[in-house]
Image (cartoon, rainbow, N blue to C red; front, top):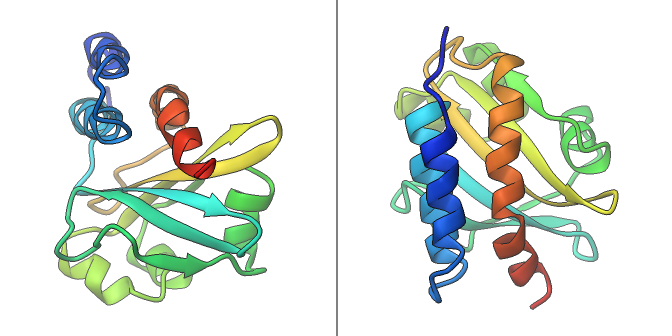
Length: 165
């Protein structure tokens, strides 16, 4: 599947960096940019708290179903270690992939989501947080990682601002 050129959407995130409403302005611009390029139904940004072994939701495009402030434990599961520990993206393409990775898979399915791209955002060898995009079955491929990674690194200043608090 061919995706749209991300140049204008990436420029919009750079422009959002100028806004004093941080991290909100940056996160909203990343959401809009990824919606226009890579695509998603559900989009969240989680910040990793290594000392607590938790990830905390700081942005959600569906706050009713996935409210800001929700936390999940960072476990020793292979899926979690791939994303948080090793910093490698995860692509799940099917309902079975969603079920194997997420305890709340039924809620995810009810939103029409059957595929996922979890993208770790890293700095100096550490995972600061993740961008989490969910869509219809089979939506994501390895080709989506590079562009999503650009958005992730443009989100990094806002994510780092939170992780320092």
